Length: 143
Image 1: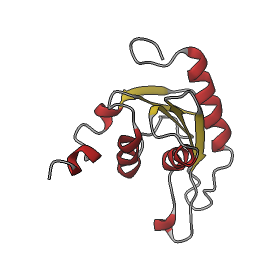
Image 2: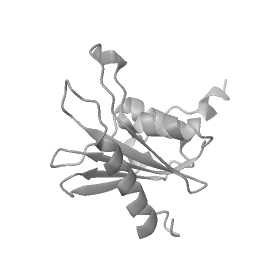
Image 3: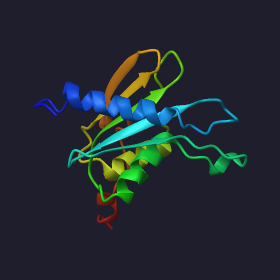
Image 4: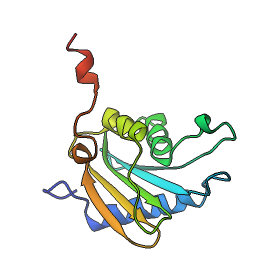
């Protein structure tokens, strides 16, 4: 990442390629809404995930959480960036549950969350802008 906290081109490209590869494996037979995600860990490793639906809709899981849980499974506890790829013309933000999980593992609330459509439209936000008031592990220590 550069001094502004944004991704350099090389890291961005790797994240995008990982998310675009993940979206190909989306299991979304009910909604037909395919999503892929990739996360950049503080050590430079990249992990990806895709959405997985279930006939019992509540058991479905979003691509962002799959990518984060994949990272955690491999020992990553600090995420420096999240990239989400979806099919609609306009990029879609993570749901509230995914934002809460991102907060849990983000290295700071200033990490970039990059939203991109497969059609090339892109928006970048800081995590704090997507979830300005969040519950975190620090709140548990205030009791």
